[in-house]
Length: 306
Image (cartoon, rainbow, N blue to C red; front, side, top):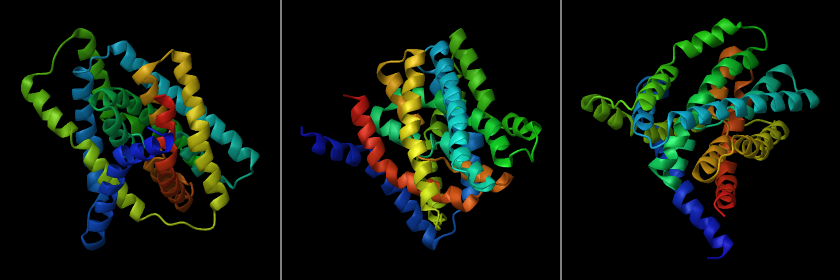
């Protein structure tokens, strides 16, 4: 198959279904009120922990590999936070813009966009690797992200408290313990977590559609395009380096690099709004990187699977 035809086939097979669901959510929201906060909290406190428990306890991957992927995600996010800080300082961005820029550099949309993309591309086997990546990313995002957004106006206690109130780390630790001991969840719990876990992908895409509908752009195209380059090009390069450091090949390498190269995450806008960044700039980055991701992720997928 010619490269161009294969490229468009990737878009139709993996990207187009995602945007169809996002578009449907935006269309419904135009005529009906949908509560994005309720959907987000349901995903965070019910669906995501259920997916972690079900996916990791039934995974063919061992606890060591699952833990390594989470550790790799945390290392990647930390490196990108440092790189983003250096770029923002070098370009002398105002403090609020700089905070949002750094957040977009290391907080990617690994769930709302990443999970559907990985599942449509690789199926359940790919999602098994994407789940521990999400765990490592979200813990790092709350710990480092709260500090970056506040730029010293909020203590580390706030960041730690945010993490401790999430069910994600507890579900991860329980799943690792069950995986290591070879203990299966009781059948009723297994079936309940399986059903709730299946709700993550469609709900995440609906949430993303509602959030993108509320995004607005203003005259900050220079910083937005710089943030997009940092998120995609530099993010993919750093992810390839981390994957090489851990010696990953095949599916693990492919999923890790793709998850690390997702568009800017909605959490970056949430933290910017809450702790003193520029929420309008953050929304612009999220919108533009989501649109650009159509071409970038399709090309990156072809590169990784060559």
